[in-house]
Length: 261
Picture (cartoon, helix red, strand yellow):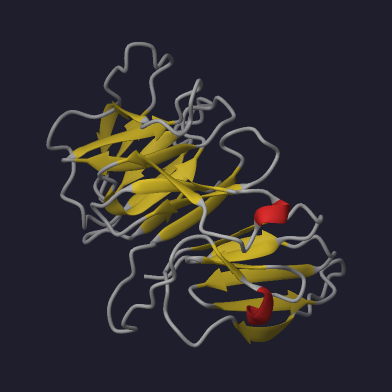
């Protein structure tokens, strides 16, 4: 499994695909009827540190940077010579898995800098690492805040499921689907997992198939899993159970799942 992130870079007609320690940059004329795109491969490292990769302006210079596992590669060069470590870099066997399956950027503590959220190996934790600020980058590892454990399912998400304009961790815990959002008074404290399905609604930590989308067109996001979709109720007050609609989307599960009209 590899994490693919499609982004539109700050430069017009340039896009990136992040995948482990490799990214592809494309450029071309996408405005005419005939689309011409060329790709150039850039390898960030020879070692395997993570499946998870993301992007964001970490140093606040107006240019997107790449976050690949424990490393920040500063744009636009993305040079290994100038990279800085978020946490202790530990390479993994390329034939196995890492402890960083997904990576996301967001300013969790409201200090104006982007922090990094890491969803680890299935069944392990979610932690966000606090950006120390531009002047302190590269002068030590970032403070780690463990906020949720366990995070089950092989395709957890960090997206706005509830419609409040803020993303949540969407996953399962012990056979129950749900989501977790930051503590508004202190995002470094553990986040509360809010159940949306009954017990034994899904499998264990290595279960495949998870996504979201407005299936019935009511303006609310629904939860997708390999055997059904769960309808979001009109109100989430009191953490009501969502309504299950059986549908065999995929026999063995499709890892990431998406809804598009």
